[in-house]
Image (cartoon, rainbow, N blue to C red; front, side):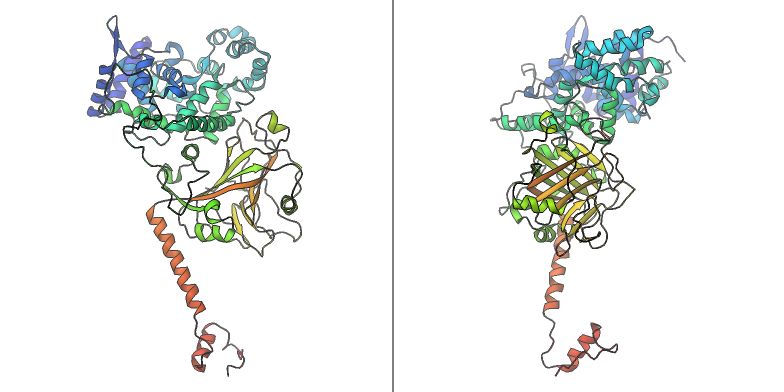
Length: 619
């Protein structure tokens, strides 16, 4: 084993390994051509600048994400010695290593965990002085944090509240296995584990940097390998930029960004693993552009970043990711492209992205807010479905007769609303909320037991992102109960309506969503101790796993989308057609028309006579 190999030699050797094992000869040729035709030269060295990288990737300047991506790439380009040698000059070898890591092609060479840790390191601000002063470990931690957070009292409090959890390397279950695996594959001695761990636990991701990255990921979530980002950037009107910004803030809230000045490693890994497992997936098709040389032609005269005006037509029409509305229906008021991108961060049915796989089944605005209308359009869909409900939070005390009637149908609220900021914590009303559920099996009418399985998932998208996975403690996943069941309604996480004693109202589960039978009001409950059909949110961000809160709201919009294609749609049409034929046949049974023997035979087949019953006179 070579213990004296310099870092530059290790990176060069790793680049050679990636080149031979992670790419075909054609892909490698394209990547080299992409680099060569755009590279700058200085003192005999060919490299890419930040402007060149942003121009090639066609990053929209309006998002201001260029410096964040450049920091990521220059850190990853120094792998596997990024901790000591980053940022790297973007030579061909460094670009190849970064592209291999960002596209997931490294998995063809290295079998290890730690990709999320590497992404965190590439985004984080590190305090190297503190990590070098082992004799003043605790003092160095606080001073290093102060330097990253501006030396404020708030900054010191952040460290006291969060960083102390990161200082124990035994709690790092993600680990730096990827770096260690790379070092082992190269036959080199790796950085000591304690030194590596100490460095990462004295770092944070600046909140604004993560916000900019999330905005980009929301935009490019539908992107495919050979699609141009400029086509999506051309759609960025001021209104859509504002939507991106608002949605990104909702996602960012899962990291506790509203009350922390930066995101620590512990928080980042916890939220990514539990709430946003597919957040980083969109980076792969973006960087796959490096192996499609004909996708973007070099242009030295192009601006540093994409400045395409929203009024200019895109070079190609953007691929439709939502089905076109029929002439009789209105465009979705809830499932916008940004909302769909948000859903793709944590939902991937059958390991396949949601884009271009959703069909509108029901919309309250189009089909009416009634459970009968809901049933006739959602039932008999054989694939998974996604329910989305938007609303406005209700005042603490009901102000109308309808609000009072709803309040009487559910247990008295003794919980505060979910905190998002100071205004939310003070119990202000009129906030917009957005909840939803993923149901993996067909809907069914509920009588004595609920339907659903362990893949059923509850979630909140606004004001803050949170995901509530199914629990094994109970199986009250979903219910649909029409009158005369009392109280009627639909929801998730509670026992079937009417299952308890009459007159007691609806029994709400510890983590549950309930809509009344008029689809006019709803309530989401979150008890931190759990114990029901859905687990409390484990995020260390805005919704701490042990917090109790409840959101009562007036329904503004309700939609259900089916996951599938024409095959599932045709199967649903056939099922309803069969149901209608059977209903018509039952209505047209020819009885009492003079043929006594035929009538008796029909009654005997129905079990009404022939077992000791006379059936009455048929004369």
